[in-house]
Amino acid sequence: MKGHLRIEEVLSERIRKIIQLNAIEHQRNQLLAKIALPWLLKDNQITSVLIGASSVNPLHNNIDSLQNLDFTKTDLLEIENILG
Image (cartoon, rainbow, N blue to C red; front, side, top):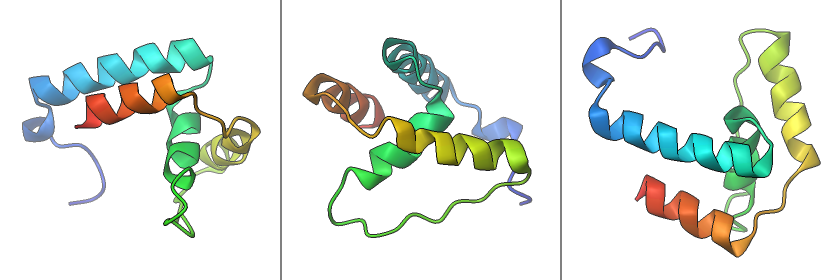
């Protein structure tokens, strides 16, 4: 595996979750790529998050994600329910 999504991994359940997460993206006016790191960092038990950036653009997204670290209780509940 080279880090790419394989066709057999594209399941209707995953697509449904992505669509639901996109709704949260629009509510927060923040790209999913910029929600992922703050979501991980919200947990006090997580002390670090390793990131991978294949180019400068993903690196900028990771840095920009630090501009909005706050989640409402509703946001957190919705994300947890989606991810199950």
